Amino acid sequence: MTDKHQQGWQLENTYQHLPELFYSPSEPAEVEHPELVVFNEKIAAELGLDSTILKEKPEIFAGNHLPDGSKPIAQAYAGHQFGYFTMLGDGRAVLLGEQLTPAGERYDIQLKGSGRTPYSRGGDGRAALGPMLREYLISEAMHGLRIPTSRSLAVTTTAEEILREEALPGAVLTRVAKSHIRVGTFQYARQQGSKADLQALADYTINRHYPEIAEDENRYLSFLYKVIEKQAALIADWQMKGFIHGVMNTDNVTISGQTIDYGPCAFMDRYDPKTVFSSIDEEGRYAYGNQPGIGAWNMARFAESLLILMEDEEEAAIPKAKEAVETYVKLVEGYWLDGMRLKLGMMDKGENDKKLIQHLLNLMQQYQADFTNTFRSLTLEQLEADSKLFQSDAFKKWYQEWQDKLNNQSPSKETAHQLMKQHNPSIIPRNYLVEEALTAASREQNYQPFHDLLTALEDPYAYTKEQEKYTATPPNQPYQTFCGT
Image 1 (cartoon, rainbow, N blue to C red):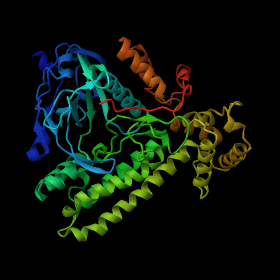
Image 2 (cartoon, rainbow, N blue to C red; image 1 turned 135 degrees about the vertical axis):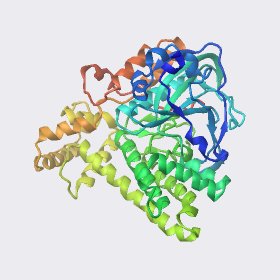
Image 3 (cartoon, one colour; image 1 turned 180 degrees about the horizontal axis):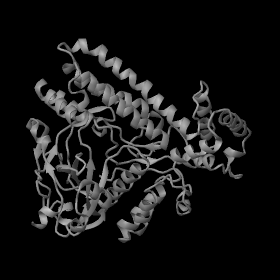
């Protein structure tokens, strides 16, 4: 058996069974000196890949050599970017194929930063090391936080300079996702294709992600409800962890319900619903507090693309689509409320729970309290005296109401705090710590801070002594991230 076959690749290319409207063949561009700088052995094992062999094959993860079974393509899609509709596509990403795992699951394997494609629109198709390491780190942190997300298998440097505002070291990220089918893919099909094209995409996506509804009487309406449910749960998860995506364009919304495309993203430090980390979001469209509402807007755009499949006459489908989108609002609030109860150890539901939760959040905003550390302190019952929030009379009154709630519920307070530990992370990827790690790697070729932070974030609910140094709040406020594209 050759080395190539021993690597463990079991690639299929079922996306290419769709009409050619949806993709273009696209070979990754070769680089002269690829070097594998980060490799995820745990994901490799889940995918059925041989880490021992592949760690010695940086040329695969740079795009120089294709893995066995690969037929690389760039996917076409569209999207509303900051509210404006645009034709798009993979301008710097190539889908190598779909890996079938030993457990029978199917995952896209994509190279990001692998050169120009037919959709590059004048771009160089390349990526800088810092943003690729950022996506690796944040996506793995999201996985540790139990938030549905794409994953990262590898980062490979290219020994090339990438020109942005300055010359930066180049890199390629190997991304793993349930699929890269987006709301924007359906918008593209509705705008550029025929009804048959749209139906082919919908049927393929249903069979891949939601086969349980394939025989439903109106499977396209069921499909809409499924995607709405996934997005509501995902965005509620973001809100409960203080995550701000930064660019919730419809081309960044996956049909599978995974978080994807980590550009100007960050975790909130001081609690403020108006927090925006993206330098390009000048109007605050994608601020933390707006994310649930933007999710509804995105689901409305998805519903619009399916109307002609749900009923013979498009007008007849509008009330059904509207009713479906309206369920999103109730779902996202319900998921959020249930999750916030768990963050506060409240196992017995009460009609005043939402008011109690919102009161705490209002106090956190008023006293500029750190989002993650406030819940961490409540979990550990460590109410530091130097905290303006904890010193305030308003908080002390709230705290007594909360304690009354815990004391009056059936499980013990000890059980409540154990529950809180399971739902309040001890640490998050603090923005300043991420930047320190990325700077050390990109500027000094020192990857130790990156690996140390990555290791600490593997289980953010562990509450270990080693994690404590990562709980410190940032020395300076505010903070912005950039796409780095």
